[in-house]
Image 1 (cartoon, one colour):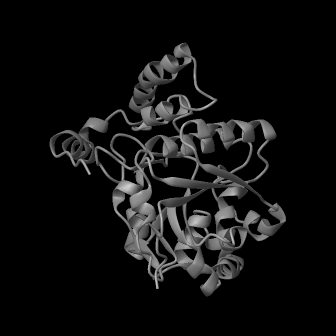
Image 2: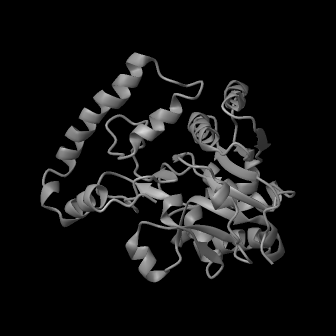
Amino acid sequence: MGVILKSNMINVCVASDDNYSKYAGVVIASILKNANFDDELNFYILDGGISDKHKDEINSLVSIKNCNINFINIDEALFNEYSKIKTHSYVTIATYYRLKLPSLLPCVDKIIYFDCDVVVNSSLSELFSIDLGDNLVAGVKDINKKVLRKNPTYVNAGVLVFNLKQMRIDKTEDEFLSWTIKNSEYIKVGDQTIINEVCRNKIKIVDDKWNVQSSNFTNRSSYISKPCVVHFVSKKKPWHWASFSYHRDLYFKYLQLTPWKLSEQDYKYWTKENQKASLIEYLKYRPLFFIRPRFYAALFKTYLFKKDN
């Protein structure tokens, strides 16, 4: 039997250490800004050492829309086996916190998890109300076509709906750990690999609009004009100078709602001047972009064959 939504309550989770607390704050601000009037939002922040100052700044976001913000202290000793995984240098131990959500949040049956390199551009009520049945997770297919050929339901872990009730029944948390111990040398994309392998055949695919994986103008998982969620999947994020992020302006839009908002001068610098720098860097990176078929496909889908939703 699926988890049934009984009210307008929506549970949301992010994980962060102190360095990423600002970006977690932008995720929360974007959710609050786009929430429906009757959305009741509960935020659970898996806290990997966030300072009191940054906690106060995150708590101040209730001024956008009233909500509940809960900090869940994390004992990193619980993640010793995951810390041994050798993957990308920018992947921190905080990304593995979600693998213990069933026990970290014992009274929560269903939750939406977001990475901190995400902005939300819509109410989450539709996403949270999907019927998971006995599926363990729901998500959007990953942008990596090579991986999808091997596993057609391979999802990107940046945006996931977790069926924590079913995961407790299936003891999925234990399965995550045992599979990791046996296969740590084959794990290439951190927790994403673990989730997709352990939950295989119990993954529900949702519409692309809930996780538009955006790198640059050409490389996007969907060309929808009004994405509900944008996930900045490139190594250089919007907060990195001269990043190629096509949807970068959305990040700065929601940043301005937070205690970390930029001055008018800095905002201009990080938008207009940054845009120029990004174009220059992209021309250096791919000077012959205009002869690539993918570039013209992106042009066509973005401007001529526009998909609104």
